[in-house]
Image (cartoon, rainbow, N blue to C red; front, top):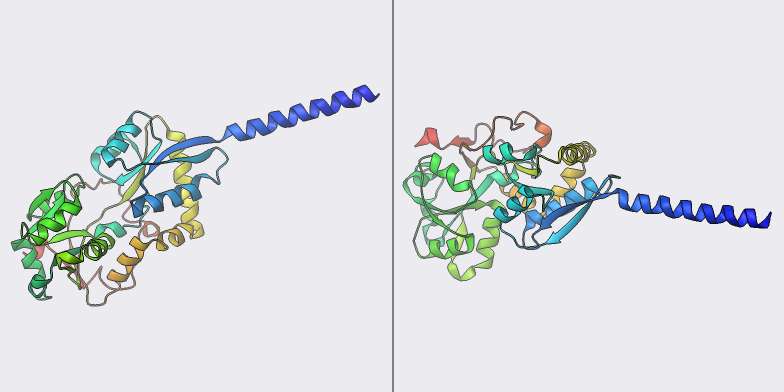
Length: 301
């Protein structure tokens, strides 16, 4: 009798070990690169962790690198990464599975204008629209933003990175630097010796959804990720996570200015499938910048 009990206990221990091992290995580690120097990357880490770590089949396996986005897209292409985020365009949506939920609620589609302080009086509310058309902007190559400005008939000067652009602006290589509102604040604060400032009552806006992208060989992950993010939206968790981020706070604060002029540009790379009509996906401003106060650059030239 004693021997039978010992065998039963041993069998139970073995069974429990198998169950524990099975549970431990059941969750698939999702490979993702996070850039520790990027506010957007820090936000996506929080968002992906909230979305996937609560799911029994997936967990986030993050690596911290400063890869250029082209490198991350190459790694996604060859299944070395499982998820990458990027402003959407026709080519990316043809090659990869796009999770068509704009994770920053469109906030990165609003750009402030950085200029030299001595030139700020030129950018008054009466002539901003025509002025932008008559001057030269600066932009970083590879972001896609410069194509939006160029397609509006504006003239640009390009560089490999934004840090170089602020020095080019100070050296009068071009007239104004449009960049994401939170980034504009950082560029001015980090370069006090360059005597730069932000045009206070002006933004340039265009639709710029940031999506998660997954390899086409991994439709299950794409489906789960979409479902989990939809759940976060329904519960209000995505709003809470996003609005805790400094880049979102700077943008929302800027666009809450009642005197703001919004010059709208068309994004020629925007796919037709963009869910523009789904108000749950986009930040809803209390101000009236989307109607009477908004101006369209092309019609005002």
